[in-house]
Image (cartoon, rainbow, N blue to C red; front, side):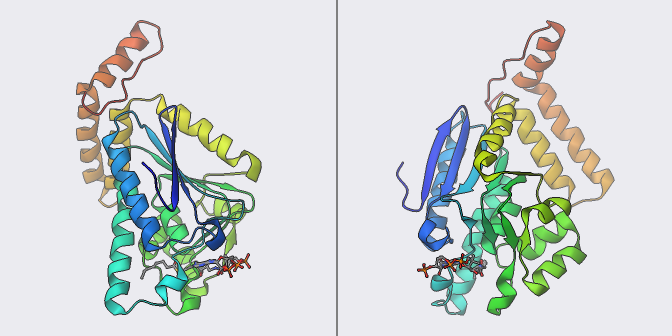
Length: 263
Ligand code: CO8
């Protein structure tokens, strides 16, 4: 399927979506969000896709936020609809059955940071810059940033970032736990793909179960979270992948997971 503002690629069970408006530093306009939504439909319909990687075109930017030229034209209702649309699509990344990795190759600002925060984890290039600078525009983060950032790095650090609108470099984002690993820009995609391909060899049912148990467990108390884990564990035990994994260990061979959610 051809898209206007993103590039969609698939290799070795890993789908890559590249935000592709480099002249506007890959800012998120309505069309890009529509493309992303359609690409997520495509991914959900394809059993063979096991991991999703998000990155930005060019060497300067992952996503420099919502498209400010478009935002400036919105009235209250249009602003509300745009925020809702972005939240729905970004929420779908978090809910996606497969793991999603953000490979942040430059600016991840405003909606760009919020997009990365909805991914399962973030790898970044050394030149990457993170920030929620909306306050400098007289607005606040509208794609989940006030909610996901404090959950990830703590409310005190999130408030400092959101109240000042200051950008932080990749090394600092790594130090405060926003980013998992930092690489030279030239090796970011290669290193991200190494991890993505390693994850893609694992069972799809167990990956989904682990992702859902972690995500759901973060919003409840420990006892409830452990009950969520029990149910997720039981689903894995009943799956073809669960049977294959344990059988392969006993037979001293590598497991051949089917990569299907049907088992
Ligand atoms: N929207 C539209 N165009 C952009 C954006 C953007 N967010 N960011 C950069 N551009 C454009 C610039 O206008 C410029 O275009 P042109 O060449 O036509 O003048 C081109 O990209 C290159 O940018 P710069 O010349 O500014 O490049 P610099 O290297 O000098 O600066 C920066 C890079 C620091 C990234 C700078 O461009 C910047 O500050 N950009 C804006 C970042 C920002 O404030 N992002 C947050 C936007 S608000 C948001 O994301 C809210 C999300 C929730 C929305 C809820 C909906 C209601």
